[in-house]
Amino acid sequence: MRRLAVLSLVFALAGCTVRGDDVSGPGSARPVRLQPGKVVEAKPASFRATIAALKGTPVVVNFWASWCAPCKAEMPRFVAASKAYDGRVEFLGVDSRDDPDAAARFIEEYSVPFASFGDARGDILVERKGSGLPMTLFFRDDGRLAFKDHGEVDEDKLESRITELLRVRRSDVAPSVSPGPRG
Image (cartoon, rainbow, N blue to C red; front, side, top):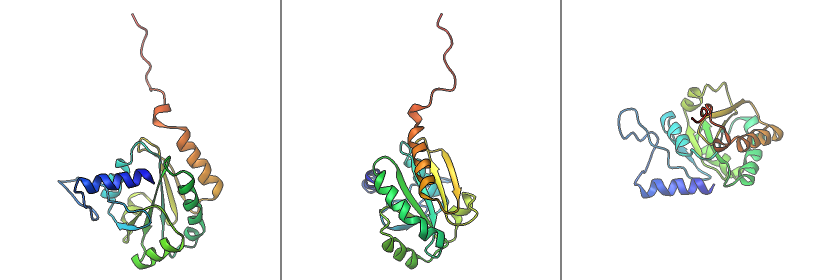
């Protein structure tokens, strides 16, 4: 959560008032200026840029909608996990194919402390090859996707996925090629 606040502050100080896919040049996008506990409209390119900007910290992204029964069942788990892993893992949501007012009520009802991307048309879900809701993506601290779960994530699976993200940190991975003998 602190990292998200710092990231938002950096964008604000840099003059990056980003709305959706604020493009600074052909094919480039900036990260979305995220707000904890709020839904901010985004497009796939700005979603990718935001994930890239969070490199250095594992990221859990939960795709949800206010009308989705399994999303309602699992959201308290994500809320609890985001609090338990605050400062070690970044949590984000993607409100997909949903009404913005209903999404705001959902965020309030479940006291969601992390930021969510608004994806009213489902473009981010489609780009991430989602087959429905809910869906959860687990990114390693180097920004690479580690796990993708379709359907409701139970407490045990959420805990094991996060534990694995924290266990396999970029700095812990040995180089793929070892140096040859010194001569």
